[in-house]
Length: 237
Ligand code: C5P
Figure 1 (cartoon, rainbow, N blue to C red):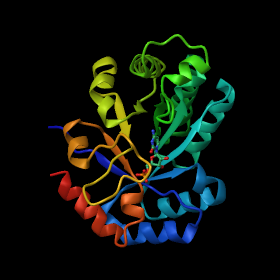
Figure 2 (spheres, rainbow, N blue to C red):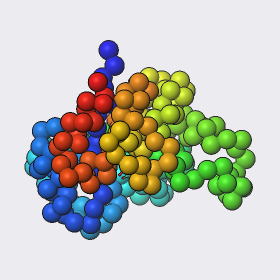
Figure 3 (spheres, rainbow, N blue to C red):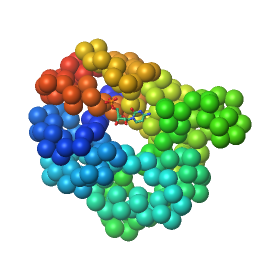
């Protein structure tokens, strides 16, 4: 039986206290939180420590992209501070992905710590085929390019990719059922679209069999975040 997608709540804020309030208000209903660039730069370690203290799992969404040695250092440092999921850009190249993945595995084995789930970012959803002509890349479609990057990520030893829910089937066909997908752009029936364009409902995300759904504003901007979580879970039934 397919396990329902786990909800990851995106804590995108400049204010530590409001992030803390959201986590407290939601309590036991949510296990996973995403810490991204905006909050990480201002108070990242404080927030990660708070989440860990509350037995939460942390998705560190910093999308590493640098030379293989530097990205390896970053992913092993993330393992050291107890991060559960983290990501890097597939566009950093095969060597970067493989070196980071191999070093993360051997580092965690040696230190006897749990290996974080290592996820690749394929093509950012802010980009479309115009990017190919700008960068002089010879791809026919964004789907081909995303598929190529996902396959490279799998071959390099990554555990999965960030994708739209609509791409999950295609990615699982190419990379196998066990290759994980983390899916943002989810909008429950009660919420507005904000700036998300190609949205998917929680019910559809269940049907499309993604592994993790990232949901931010529909929960964090709701006057009652715990109730928003309950309503989302209801939509997933
Ligand atoms: O508030 P909302 O639910 O739109 O938040 C979605 C989260 O997922 C944000 O942190 C956003 O940066 C992230 N994200 C996204 N689309 C992607 C990759 C990440 O919305 N393709």
